Image (cartoon, rainbow, N blue to C red; front, side, top):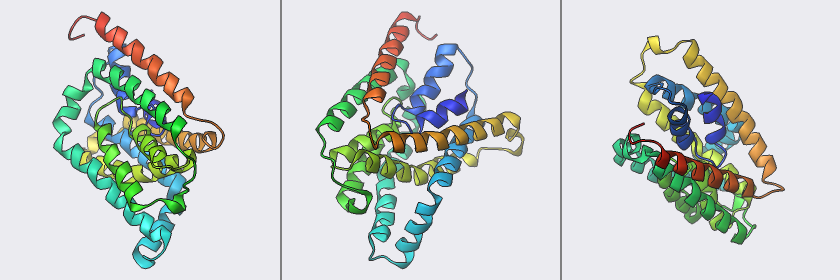
Length: 257
């Protein structure tokens, strides 16, 4: 179940980190532990690499060998856009694992970012394609990604919102967000891989990897196609309804439960 949640939440603008906190909390499950967290990140990494490997081969080729091209520039833009999120993740890692995992805060952020996404999406122009993304666009999106350290914000949601704010089409904003997730997910996986032992790789671990990878791959394809014809409104309503439910449950439960 958590693999499916990760595969959906990592790429749809609904916050995977929020769902991975809320599902065990709502069902009163024990924390599955670090090894399973690594498995889920490996799964979504496989999904994004499998879907965009041709794009990354072209980007790396142009970035290293043909720097004067737009693809070459985009490669370096993506790497630069990764830095703010990585820096904030390093600086606030402890808070991300403790303070920021408060269900009440998560519920509030689900609603707040849903409203912001809707407001920006409805007012944004729809002109820029991937070949027109600039350095300023990339850095703006990269700095927005730093907010995703708070569960409920959603890394994909906040970067797509920032992309729309900068005038990217919905599909372009989604694709840039997915490409940007590749170095982010690689970094997150490597950071935790050192704490993984050979004994942690078992049937449960592999189930998490496979389920997150398969569902993540499907989610990417679905969202790119969906956004060519529709807006983010269905995800906005989902975030608001879920956020309200989480807040109500958090206030109704005794402290510490």
